[in-house]
Structure formats: C-alpha cells, structure tokens
Length: 513
Image 1 (tube, rainbow, N blue to C red):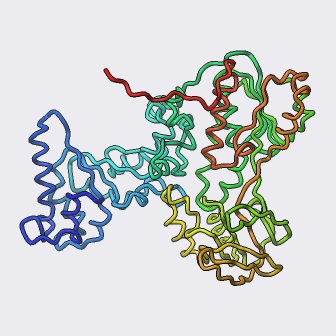
Image 2: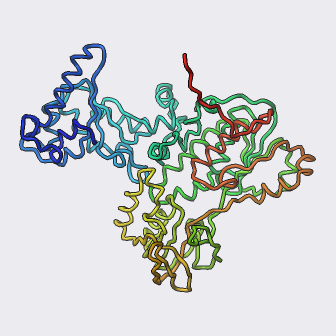
Image 3: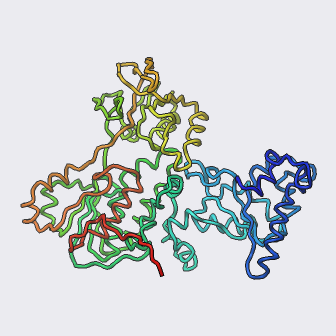
C-alpha cells in the first residue's frame, strides 16, 4: 500500500530518528495525528474510515505483541470510526478464483475485531450469502465488501433480503473486471453483460425491454452465447427454442471447467440453465445436431447460430501468423486432451494463445502423472493474464508442480520424437525430445451451418425465416466474456426494424449548465 501514512508505519521505509521513527508507537504517530485532526474537522457530520494493509505488518515481529499488526491495533484500534482491512499488493488481495477461495483474507483480517470495538469491513471474493454470513457470525467482520460480487449482480443485497438466493448471478472470479481496470478500459463482467453498458446501450442487469412481436426464435448452440441469448430473449417474452448437439447445455464451459481451479466457471452455465428452466416459453432440445434442411423446416421466424469454435492444430511463423499442422495420434489440440485422449510423456505444449489455456493444460496433464514442458514465444506463460492478476500465480503454480517453461521460443520443425525450437531474439535453435505434442494457438469458427444457410437466401425467405445471425465464438472466437456479451447483444437488438446497427450506442457529451 504505497501511500505516505503507510510508509511511516513501514520500518523498511521509515528510517527517521525523531518522534516519528523508531518504535511502532512513533511510526504510527502521523496516522494518529491525521485521524484525530480529521475527526475534529468532521465532528458528527461524517464518519472517518481508515483503510490499511495488514499483511506486511503481520510479518514484522513485535516486542510487546504477536506482531506489529497486533501492536498497531492495540495502540490505535479505537481512533477511527471504521477499519477497512486490505492487503498491500492488489494482485494478492484480488486474485482470480483459480488461486483463491471465498473469504481468503481471513488470515489477514481475522484478528482485528479482537483488538477494537469499532466496526471492521473486509473483502475476500465473497460470492454467496453463506460466505458472508459465516465471517459475520464468527466475529471476523462486521460487514463485508463485495465489489466483484456486486459487479456480477448489483441486486445481490436485494435478493438476499427477499430470500431469492437461487436467483443470484454469482461471481465466477475470472477477474475480467480487474483486467479492465489494469488496462484502463470500461469495465466488463462475464456473468453480467450489462455492466458498463447501462448508459451507452440502456441495459439493466434485471430488466429488459419487452418483445416487439410474437415471432419465435431458434437458438442453435447451448454454450455461453446461446444460453445468454436464450435467457434474455425469454425474459423479453419471445417464444424460444434452444438446440444443442451435446447431452447437456454449457458448450465450452463444460470442457474448460474440469481444468484446475476452473470449476467456478460452471456458474455461467448453472445460473442461466436454472433461470431458463423456470420459464414456460423456452423449449430445450439436446443431442440435436441440426443441418440446414432441419432449420428451414422447423418454421421459426428468427434463427441465430452460436455453435462455438474449435482449436486448430497449428504453430506460428516469425510474424505470429498461424501455420496449419496435420493432426496425428501424437499431435493434439486442447479438445483432444479434454476428451481424455491417450498421452505419452514427455508431453510438450506449444502455447501462443496469450490467455489461460496453455498453462491450465500444463497443470492438468501434470496432474495426470506426465512429464510436461510448456514452450511459448512470449516472455511469460499466459502473458495476457497479467491483466487479470494471474500471471505471477501461474508462474508459481508451474514451478510448484515441476512443469518446465521455455519462454521466448517457437517451434519451427516437428519430428516424430522431437521438436526444433528457435529463440525469438537470438535465433539460436535446439531440439527438444517429445512424446505427445499439444498445440494451443488459434481457434476456428464452427460456422459451416450459418454459412450454408446464409448462402441460400431464397430458401430462407421461402421458409419464413426473417433474420439469420451468427454470434459468439462461431462468429469471432474470444473469451467467455465476449460470448456472453454477444448473446445479450443479440437478444436486445435482433428485432430492430429501423436499420440501426447493433454496434450503435449513445455517446457521452459534456453538458454545460
């Protein structure tokens, strides 16, 4: 926590020899004076809250208490009107669900209430009422801070109050919201596609405009995009059918959620399926792989394909363009691994995807008992995950599990039992022995059904289909957040009759009064 009052508290930064340095009592003098002065100015018109990191102070020994953190609160616990406890490093305070559990900050805030009578608030990826109530009932906190949970469901408190816990859109801890902060861009949320679009598009997390007709809609594909489109269309009042070729709804979520630390992603599916199951204007058809003739005969007014994407067996050239590779029994894609294909050690993963898949597969395969090496052309494994506060934790996890990471290299040749890799800067080459080779690079849209339908406009018109659209990964492969957003966007805009583009939104103009 790099602010001046904390620097005075911190023995590493505070080397003063006057009354503001030395003992913790002296080092906390500035903090006491600031709080006292602010309270004298505020009087009874405002409460004075102090937000402080405890993790580093807990590691410093105290001559009179368990730690300097304990001593600090023994000296100053009654000064402010409220204590807000945090960690000094944001990536530790706000980790993704891959690397933390709900209430993970209890070791850092659990002692404070024992040393003060003032209210204590804390965070810690609280996603459900049970997590929150547990810490309050056990005397850890007086009330909880739930930023990410409130982004996922701004009406979370109302739903708890009304006894509608099953309707909570629970945070999955993906940290897409945190990534927006780190990139300096408008906030987005995987679970709540209306987040950040309240003004620009007029979206509301709980309310949606009513239907403009009695037209029926067929959604083909039950992944994140298809599920969100179905739910939002049904909430508008449209009769909807959703068809999927698999035995259960969920699409890519069903596969990816089995990877280490990814089970919270199931909430994307669970929330939408549970809500859809309560609606009488939605029909669900599983294990139905529709062809163009099927779609034309079904008699729906509107059709949207959300049929996902598939990982391609490919490596990359020096300009980062993908180079197609022929699959064999030993050259595999993430789908092959997730389906339980046979693997042979040593397993080599070549990852140029930027996001989480390569590192997750390395963990997954290592947990199966294989020797694993991950090769990436980037300086770090999963470099985009810096934005989601995960890149350091990914590196630590690979080290803990004994997974070798070779960075700044790309594969240039694939032999039967080896790969040749090239250093991105020096161009030095070396051969690496391999068993199975898993290629994690680019994905291709599963858009053949859409293209076939789109190419026959006369048949579409004859069948009564008014509109045909393609959304989600089958349109442009991306993260889960993009697929959910695409589904929500479609449900809100597919019936526009004035020719407006689905990409139009209100601009924010300055108002001078």
